[in-house]
Image 1 (cartoon, helix red, strand yellow):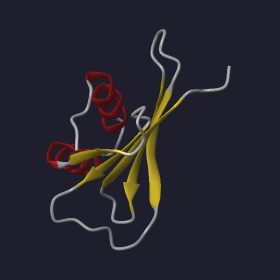
Image 2: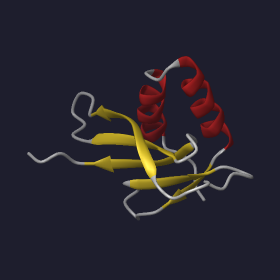
Image 3: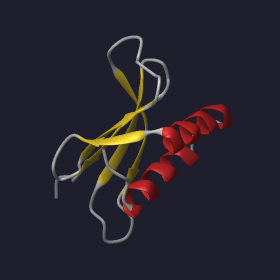
Image 4: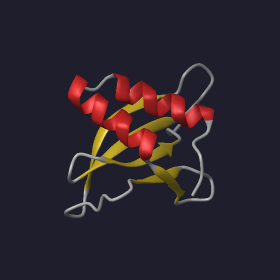
Length: 96
């Protein structure tokens, strides 16, 4: 397990800030409690593990996306699980 970098946290919070109030509150609570697993060595895919929570079924849904800021050429997508809980974040580099 690992900690989020400042850039990862900033991108995630930009997405969460756009959500409806109840969803935003749930995602912020999940983010505060989550343990973070690095799925790919370049940190382009991170999974959130919430203490005591096991998703009721497989699958994920994108919550939102944020594009690169300034000279950052990347996109970040935040996903929720089938129960509407914080699940995964993925970073991609757009085609140039």
